[in-house]
Length: 226
Image (cartoon, rainbow, N blue to C red):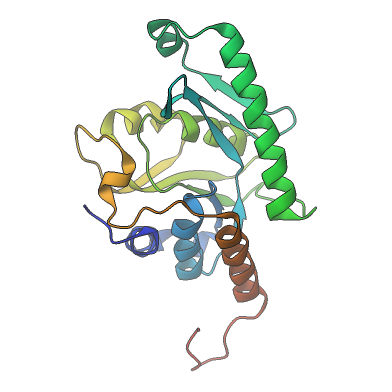
């Protein structure tokens, strides 16, 4: 295990991203697990924190195995690993049904987390896309494609841990990749954390609110942050 929890992972990752502070970055978290990691980065870089809504499309009877992913947008970004689908003999009807289910969950989360607030504008800014780990890279792939369409001047992928082969495949989609640990033979991301509890909606909304308060009301000189 490399990290105590997602907050510990976020602080260690933030230390690798300090060179971006002068670029006025915006931190985009993949909920829910990426939010506690991204919160620590946003706090360290004194950057706005927003969400990039993405959902994994799990394989039949193996929901943790990413068959593909969908990202919120107009139109939504959809990626399906056709080679994996063929190898597992996944019916097209399952792919379509699961894609629709995850798009519905994206809509629910957008309403729950954003409460009608539009996304932060990232055009012309450095955007740091954050998750708690990269295994197959399917979810991050659609996240980066969706973020790139919004016109950032620089697109950075940041994760505490990532499989080297997945990061290599994602390389062409980002201008920079920052990762603390890249173990070979990486299995489940949770094996890298002592505490890998499922982050809930309440935790996500709380961290977003705390990040927004920190940006709107920076501490006075000489006063430590709470």
